[in-house]
Length: 410
Image (tube, rainbow, N blue to C red; front, top):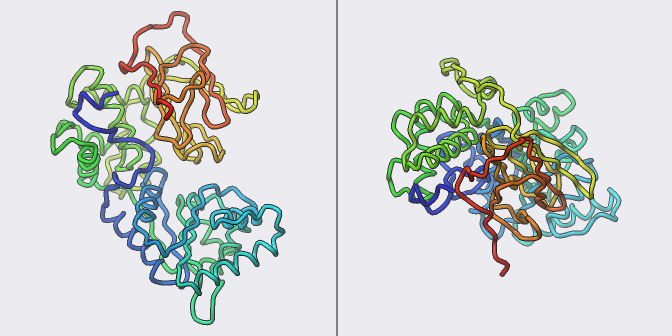
C-alpha cells in the first residue's frame, strides 16, 4: 500500500474503530463526558445518537479502554434479537451460559448477579450499540433492567447508542415510561469545517506524519464540502485520494487526486443524507457523479455452499463486516464489525483485511491483502467470497503495487 511512500507507520484512515485515532471535537468530548457520567450516577441511563459514520463506535471503544478495573461491562452489538435472546446475550457477556434457561430463570440470574456485584463494590455497565434496531419489546426489557435496585441505588448503568431512529422510538407513546428513565440524551453532529481539517491532520499525525502536511491546503475545503464533516466519509475519501497520489508516485495529495477519488467512489449520492447533519448554511453543492461504467467483476457470498448474496464490483470501495453500516453485512460472530474491504479500479480488484479478529484466507493461508483473479475464493469466518472477473481481457497490472501478503503462522 502507500504507507512507505508517505513515510507513515500505519494506515491513517482505516474504517475500523481505533481509539488511538479518536479526534475529540467539542461534540465528541461532550458525548464522552455523558458516557463517563454513568459511572458516577446510577439513576436512569444515557442515550447517544448520531448519523452513520459520525464516530459513535470509536467513542465507545475509547470510553471502554479508559474504564477502571472495578467496572464490569456487557457490550452488545447484535441487536436484532427477541426479548429472551437479548437477556440471554447480556448474561453471556457476564460469563454465564444461559441458553437452556427459560425467561424467569434468566431474569433471576441477572438480578442476583447485579445485586452481588453491587454488594462487592463493583459497578456494572451495559452498552448497546446499534440500539435503533431494538424492537419495542426489547426496549421494554431494557427499562425493566434499569429498575433493578437495592434499597438505595440502581445496580445497572446503561448506555444506548444508535442512529437517529433510536430517538424516534424513544419518543413514541408506547415507550413513554422508558423515555422518562433517560437522564441524559445527546446527538452527535458532524464536524465543522475547521474540525474536519484538524481531524485529518490528527489521524495523519497518529499514523506517523510527524507534522508534515500530506494533503495540500486547497484540498481541505473540498473534502469538507464532499463529506459534510462525517468522519467515516472523510476516511473513505482521504484514503482513496492517497491511493490516487500513490498511483502517481507522489507523496503529496493534490486536488487532482481528490478528483480521481471522486471518480473511483462514484460519489454524488452521499450529500443528500449527510446534509441533515449540517446547519442551513452548509454548502449543498453536489459533487460530480462519475458516468456509469460496466462492472469490473462481481462477488458471490456463500455459506455452507449456498449463495446468500451477490454484488457487482465497479471502481471504488466495498466494505464487508458484521454491522449494518457496511456495504455487505454478514451477521455472524466470526465476522468483525468492519472485517475486510474490496478496492476496485478500472484494471483489477484487491481484497484487504481491516485488522479483523479472524482474518481472511486464500488457499488456506491467512493474508493481509490479495489481488483477486477470476475464480478466487476468499474465506471470511464461515463464509466464502468467490470473485468472478467480468471482462474478456484482464489487465495484468497491479493497481496498488501489492501482491498477496501472507501472515506467517506463529
